[in-house]
Image 1 (tube, rainbow, N blue to C red):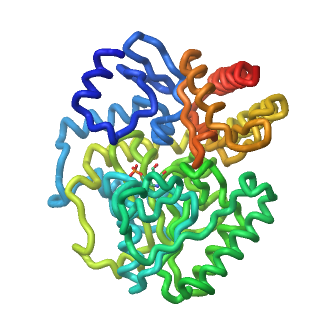
Image 2 (tube, rainbow, N blue to C red):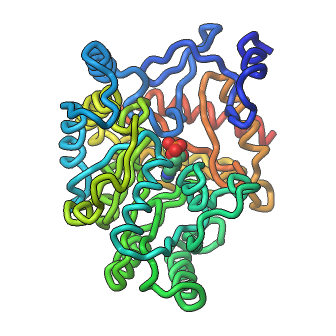
Length: 422
Ligand SMILES: Cc1ncc(COP(=O)(O)O)c(C=O)c1O
């Protein structure tokens, strides 16, 4: 055990779990460098956060410049980076999203969005989707159903939160169309048996489930949610904390599907790793959320906002490249699927791709992922899993990855699965 690991065990509460024991000393573009000087291709991106890679020069400059000016305003003073970050967001978020408030984390932004929905509709019901992940705070963990262990021991959670199945074609062994029908049928049953639509403030949905196993909602499902929401005065909250900022090929997955959310929740990649999140909605909706109804000390920190401005400006040049890179990645991963019996499914959008690892009878195979992660680690690739069984490769390289780097990472996965399958 390294000296740092033993010091960590001595002083850091074990509740915060780490996905590896790699000691990072430096990061550079698409790479992480550990304390032994070993370089890793980072295909986890700090869990979908470093969409333009680590330590991008434009981000470094913006952060340094802002630190030299001032780095805290605490919700007391006006400052330019806050307003500019809002203006930059308005240029890229879906039509109808006009104003923003900033928080620190995804969980906080989710809670802010739900508070906005309850306050402005005067209704209590929140409908969430089984397998969704929305954070770990007491409110947001109520909305999180990707793994029961995240909720275990914390009940009672928030009341009036209802869970409906999300389309999972591969797990349900059916087509996307059939899974969409089944999920919609379940939603109508929920309205029939548990809560009437007129009591529902919001749907809180990830347009592509992240922690839940990289399942895209599909365009028809999102359109149906939009139309049910319109019919009953329910707000559609899109949690794009993981799917935003070019990850799925457009700025936001709502734009991929052409479905406008009423409320957009953003985090992770918004500021390339500086802590920042945001909630966007129409001016009309925000006019019904009175000043002081919500607030924060650190949210919208000047340095984080400077980082967000540089990140968004950089992404304008990066996002057009996601489509071709995605095509290449899907074609290579599907070719691997043809050769490896341990790959059951390859799914996703853009550069948010799930590779579902299964055993000989098609059941989830977490041991396959463990083997792959260890092999990849030795070979210089850092990769994470997702899904309720931790058996899905979460394939999320930086959006400015090169084709050569993509190929290197996929070759490592190929070799790891070959050695697993023996
Ligand atoms: C879709 C989604 N929403 C919310 C969150 C919570 O974000 P945070 O960890 O910044 O609180 C996450 C984190 O993984 C997420 O993926």
